[in-house]
Image (cartoon, rainbow, N blue to C red; front, side):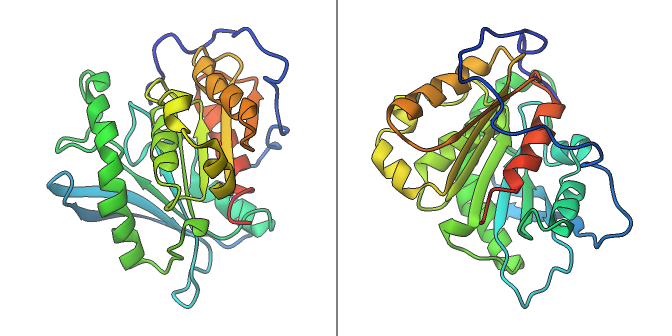
Length: 273
């Protein structure tokens, strides 16, 4: 994991609505429970026509996954210093979802964690900031390679109402950029402390009325100790002015794993319902 430089441990100047929309998760929310059914986590390979190579992504299938049912899918994107294993290293989405599903708080869903760095050497090596163009190029890999692979190998629902896109930092910017550009593909969008790759609001949401009509949920979050709050706040203010419904959740964290894990836990309870 690599947070954006200068974004951690800074108490940002807050506006009146820069406040939590929900309480933090309770103690133990991220602990594996032996007395409940567990889903499956697997690493799969796919041929990327976009990149011209074989790539990897991690896939979580929920407890009691069955080909007799069709499941919604959350595509979950990592940060600039991460890869397809980043979410699993600090958040264990499989544990979070196993617990939420067991408690009846989340819909059983498939979570896909791809590598958002669409280039032949997609490892987080050297100057990771130099790979920013590859994160933009991932739009085509996601739409033309990742999603078709998932829909051919797993029993999933294939309409926009059953596809969500969310991510942290660089992946949060990707989720906003790609999600708003393809509202015919994604009905649910989440951005957790989105990075400066996020397009300007006017470019991101040129037709606020259409966005308001099509989005099932838009979740924007940031920590109040994160200097990058200016990116998310700028979008929040634009959406508020244009009357586009969204959740604006500002907690007490920085640009850090605690914020991302907490918001995945919260976001997961609001999608596909």
